[in-house]
Image 1 (cartoon, rainbow, N blue to C red):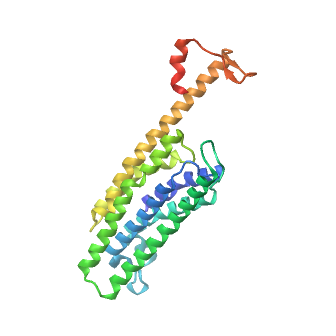
Image 2: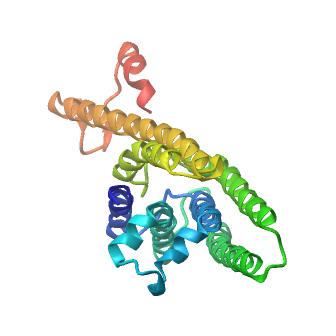
Length: 275
C-alpha cells in the first residue's frame, strides 16, 4: 500500500509542472505512449495470472474491503502507474502548443500533435481489446488453462519489450534540447529508486513471473540515467549563472550593447565550453 501511495505521490510534481507551465514541451509522446501501454499490458498480465485472487473480492466470499485490498496489493500496485501516466498524457495533449520555433514548421508541429493523439487513442484501444480478449478466453472455456497462462506471458513479454525502449526517446529529446523542459526531476528522483522497490516486492510475491518485474528493472536503470542528465543540466546552468553574475560585478558586461565584452584568448578557452 505504501508503494501504491508512493507511486501516486511521485507523479504529482510532473502534473504540477505541466499545469504550471501550461505546456508539456520537452516530454516525449513516444515515451508516454509506450509507458502507458506497457503499464496496461503488465496489468493485464498480472490480472490473468492472479485472477482467482481478484474474484475473491466478490461479496459472496465474505471478505471485507480491507481484506480485499490486502489480498490484491500486487494488482493494485501495478494499476497505479499506468493510471497516473494516463493523466500525464492527457495533460500533455491538453496543453500542447503549436507555436513554431526556429528550424520548425507549422506542419511539423501539427504532425507531432496528430501522432501523439493517434498513439494515445491506439494504446488505449489496444489495451482494452487485449483485456477483453483475455477475459473472454479465460471464461469461455475454449482454451486450456495452459494456453491462458501462455497468453498472459506473451502479453507480459510485449510489455517488457516496450519498457526496454520506453525511455530511449525521452533520453534523446532531453539531450538534444539540452534542458529538462517540462520533465520533472522530482518525479524521477522518486520513481527511480521506487522502480527497484517494486521489483523487490514483485519477487517476494507468490507466483510472480519475470514479465511482471523485469520491466521495472529496465525502467529504474533508464530513469537513473535521466536523473543524472537533469542534475548535470542544473549544475551547469547554475555555474553559468554565477559566472555571468561575476562578469556583471566586474563590469565585464555591457548592458547597453547587451553582449559580453570580448575577453582575451585564455578567458575564451576557459568559458568557451558554456557557449
